[in-house]
Length: 278
Image (tube, rainbow, N blue to C red; front, top):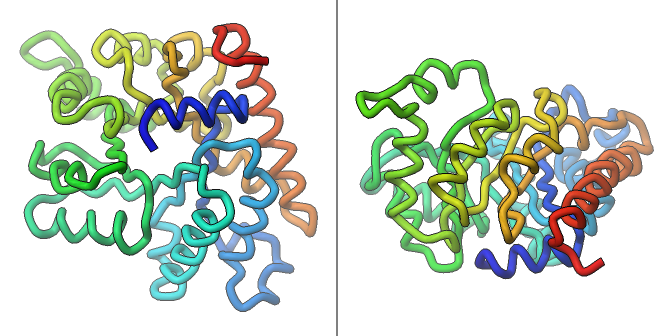
C-alpha cells in the first residue's frame, strides 16, 4: 500500500484514525477470560466494532512479548485475522527496533515475513544501516521516530545541535533522504503541535504517525492545523482512549462510540481542507 492507496482509504472512510491494539490483562473485561485466548478475543471485538472507522491499527509488541509465547500467538492470530477480514487496514508493528547487521535483518524478517505487518516503527539512533534492512522489502513502510510526545524527548530530541537546529530536525532531514514518501513515515507527537509545522518544512509530503491525542493530552484540531498536507499526511493514533472506553460486556460498542467521535472530527477536518468528496 503506497501513499496514494493509503490516501484513498482515508477518503473512502473519511478518517485518518489508527487504533493502538495494546491489550493489558489487568484492564481487559473479565468475562473474556472464559475464552482460551482472551487477548485475541479482545482484539477481535475491537477490530470488528471499528474496522469501518479506521485506516490503520498499531499493536505495540511489548504488550504481547510480556506474555511470552502465548502473547506472540495472540499477536499472530490478530494480524492474520485483520489481513483475512479487513485487508484494507494498514497494520503497523509498534516495535521501535534499532539495531544493525544480521540482527536488523532478523527483526525485519520477523515483522514483515512472519507476522506480515505492513509497517514498523524504528529508532534511527544507530544510523542508516539500522534502517536499510527494512527498506529492502517492497510495499512495506518504515516509520522512523522523529519527535516523540513523551517528556524525555527534551533529553536528546529537542537539544540544539551546532547547526542551531533541534536534534530531531537533523534526524528527520537526514533520514528523509533514505527513501521516498511511499515507504517512509515519521513519528511526530501530538503534544507539541508547533513542532509539526517545523517538520512539514522539511518533509511536506511524507505521512506522519501521530501518537498522543487523547489520554496523553494532544489535541486533534491543533495537530491537523499544523500537520495536514494535500494527501492528509496524518495517521492519528489513539490507544487507551478507544480500547478501554468500556470495561464490561459492551466494551466493543463503547470502543466504537469513542472511535466514531474521533472519526466525526476527522471527517470535518477533511471537509474543511477539501480532502473528501462528501
